[in-house]
Image 1: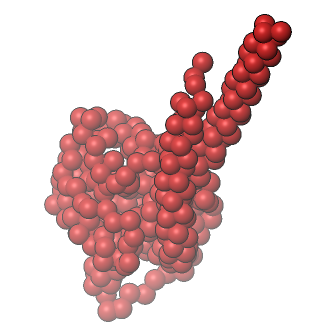
Image 2: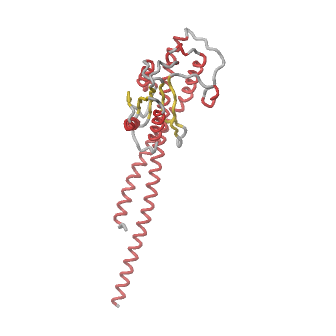
Image 3: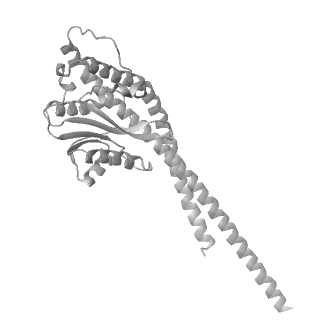
Length: 290
């Protein structure tokens, strides 16, 4: 049985840990609120932009732009994986990495582009090839933050080094719910009408008039809207990351409080037992002297 001194030491240690997790919870909560506001503010635009791309694809000959058609088949897929740089967020990174690796194993040959240290580590352990690794920031002020990523993946696709470019990221649903999401980014495929508005694909029935020309317009708009999808995926991942970390730190703080309560109860019981034992010894000694 531990001594009262040892229990006091353990209580002090757990209290110190609780202070750390509480501070991390507050920091994560502040970042979470900012990331959520930023994500929700751009989500509608990103969804409408993606719907616009799909509508254009549905009404446009794929030969009109290189991003609308598959290059000569290389047999490779390029997966853009977004994770966090740090841990202490439960199964967040494991869930994204598992989703990405599951998708990669379905491809004859897959290469990775990673954003986030945890994703890079997971891909290296799995044995897949990483063709590019980009620094991931906890906050992305504008779409310029992912311009190097967008330029790289578009360049790889246009060069025929991959048949398909896929985004794997964490979709922010709510503070308590985050879901790994796979989005086939390139080539932009014609939508399946059977999917309907559930997937934000309310297809336009009208014809498009291109000015000055379809080639010029598509050359300008498709890379920008593709970049927007990557940017939104980064915002979703950041919001989900900070939410998951806040929840994880709150759970850790609550668990530390429970441990302190249990140790305090154990300490009081042991202290009461020691006092009772001392009183019994005093009484026994007095009786022996009389």
